[in-house]
Every structure is written in C-alpha cells, then in structure tokens.
Image (tube, rainbow, N blue to C red; front, side, top):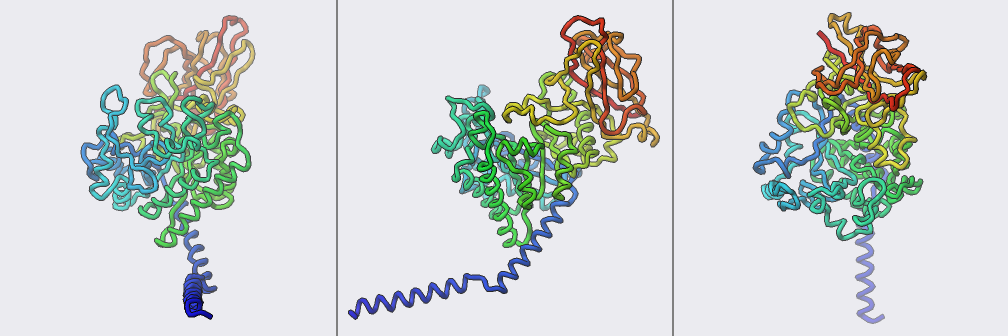
Length: 561
C-alpha cells in the first residue's frame, strides 16, 4: 500500500472513531431518556396548573403605541399609553401584539422577520403617516416594546403573552397605510398569496398568505420560536382571527379539505414542540393559546381543526370570537369541559353602523355582554380593540358578583351577522345562536302570525331585588313600520305586556335622542325576566296591511336604585 493511501486510511479511521465518540456522547442513554421523560411530564403538569389559573380580564393590546403614540423611546412613555393605568384593575393577563401589520412585520427586535421601523409619511392625507414611529430608537437603545411589556408585567405580577397575528391583512384594506404595511416577504413571493391586488379575493384580504406553502408555515413557526427563545413570555397566542383566510380555497368561496387541516395541525404541533423544548430548557412552561371562531364546524372549513388541537393537547387555552359570534356561549363552554380547557370569551367592540345612541359600545352594554358570558360558564373575558386603560371596563367586567348589581343594557346581538359572511363561505349555515335579531339581521312581521326573538339575561334580577337593590326594567323594541302600541300584542315569556309607549332612540343611559319614534317601550316587572334566555313574542294585528313591517332590535335596560 502506498504511503499516501496508508496515511489516508489512518486519518479516515481516526475521523470515524471521533465521529463515533461524538455520536455516543450525543445519543441519550436509557437513563437520560427516563430523566427527559420525567422532566417533560413535570413540565406538562405545571403547564396545566398555569393554564387553569384565574384570569378575570385579558387585555389584548395591538401594539400600536411605539408606531403612533410614543413621544419618546422610553419604557415610561410606552407604558403610559395603555398599560400603567391598568394597575389596580381586574386585568390579570396582557396579550401583547408587536404591531398589527402584514405577515412578518414586527416592532420587537426580530432577525427572522422584519422590523417595522419606517418613518415614512406614506399616503396619509393628514401628512403624518408613520413619522412618529419610535421602533428603531427603542431597539437602538437596547430594548423594544415586547421586552418593556414583559418587564412591567413581571414586576407587577401580571401574566404576559406574545400575541402573533397569524395572517394580518391590513395591507390589503386600501387604506393610506396599506402599501407601507405590505412586507418584503410578500413582495418577494407573490405566489405565496391567496390572491392579488388586481384580482381580489371573494373572502378576506387578497394579501393573505397561503398556508398551503410549507415555507409560509415554516416562517410562522420560526417567528414564534424566535420570541420564545429571546423573551421571557408566559405564553404565546396564535391569533387566527386576524385574519381568517389561510388558504386559496376560502378566498375563492370554497371550503378547505382535510389535507389543508392536516397541514395546519402539523404546524400547531410544531409550535407545541418548540414551546416544550424551550420550556424544558428554561425550566418553566410556555402556554399556547389560540383565538378562533366559536364554531368547530366553521373553523374546520377555514382549515382550523380546533377539536383535534384540543384532543391532542396541542393548545392550553381557547379564546373565541372577534368580528362575529356564531353560537351561544354555552356551546364553547361545553367544548371546553369536554377537553378540560379554559375558555376565554372575546368581547370585541361592536361595528354595527345602525346603532342609534351607540348603545352597543356603551359601558352598560359591555356589562350585559360580560355577565352573559360569565353566566354561561366562561373562564375569562378577553377584551379586544379597547385601549383606554382608564375605561371602566377594566375595573368592572372581571368580577361577576359585583357586576350583577350594576346598571346594564342587554341587546340580542352586539356584532351582527354580516361580518361572518365576509370571511366564511356560506356563513349562514354556521349561525346557530338563539339571539340573532339586530339591525343587520331584522325579522319580517306578518300580520296575525307570532314572531319570536330571544334575549339573554345573565343575572337574576328578582334575586338582586331581594338583596335590597330595587330594579327598573325596560324592554325596548325597534320597529320599521307602525309603532302604534295597539297594533301589537307583545309577550315576554308567557306574560302579555301592557302599557306600551311609542318612543325614539335612547342612549344606554336612557337619554332621549328625540329622533323618529320607531320604538315600543314597556316597563317590565323584574319577576317576569328569567336568568338565561328570555323569549320575546310579537304579533302584528291582522288589520295592518302596510309594508314593510320589520322588527329590527331588542334591548332590555336594567337600572338599580
């Protein structure tokens, strides 16, 4: 054997030996496997305990402060905008989104995504645009909004999650900001989008990423992994409600298939693996929460297999609702019980345009919505798009016993039904809640034929009266057509109501707006209002022949003395 060949053989033998030693050193022994298995079991036990902790109110902050509102890049200034004022409130958890923007734009110090540091005026007609954006200054000073939020939360014993908008499409809304929000990844890979600016999608925003591409799912996992590795968060939220198109099929008015759901489930499974691996390394669990529609069936056609995620233990918390609600709260509560999982009731702001007096966004209406959710058995109320830290919601909605004795306005439907159709193909097939009557979803009245509506009341008003709180209860019905009391027979439950009065629209506080009298108002004996679903029946007199005769709204005001 030539000397060179012999030397090569010796070197190869030494190299193979070294590789063998390295492999032996890196291959877990049975003892290591047992140790790791025990550690994982303990991590999962601890995670379960954390998932079930009390959370009165969850505050979802969309993270706009550093871009629009901070006067300087300091922690004090950032926190002053929306956070410091929460101290002493009922907020137990902050879900912090680092910028509500296109896929991959963030205001934390990311290397996987893109830092949103532009100060362009863009196309803002006011000439301001993003000129106030302090993100780059925060990072230059060695910090960022997410780190500041975590430090504040740890100091004040508040739980903090990073909220990741899985497919935000503000970059497709035709706003002055849209082009600037369109991230580099979408410019480089237009083939990864569900549609295009020239060919708009039937549902959702055309700029939504198509999660059928493995690269898109890989990026989503990488964004989460980077945050879990670099920030001491208590959990991460995958906010699938922002926005609800993940596949081309949905954009084109078709349902997704099982293959699409399997892709998404595998992505969620990878996120769980990432959080467990990093949780083991840091010695503390990282919780996984998702925000999704409140219908297993509707989510499934969108590509989200919620029940499977729960069954496989891939998530810890289920937050539901946003632009719309498809079921009564009890449906989701039963799902949570089935899989022993906390349920968060999402109380986003109402976007109904036809709401005289702005009743639905009043504190009285928020109280009614919150106590209905608590009464149905949810584990927390989750507020979205409410940013004033001094708003009474933060100090009232998280404690049902105190909430029960405050003035309220119950409405049959706070957010309407139109929004669901914007996102979900043939959405009406999934609307199963009892309480649907609202200006967007009125009920036609046929003379002589009873029409039925429902309104939920989450408190026992008569019981509250027995506790010394005298209540005045007013049922208000909005009608298009005749509002002569004599033209109707109105029942609440099996009780025929009398003494009806024509009135105009009123604010939640009862102030008369002095507009057209298109409402019928009845004073109701509190004993005739049940805790739970109340049946309201209207029968239009057969003599009424004029059209249209339409029932547009139900409101029940409860005021305590």
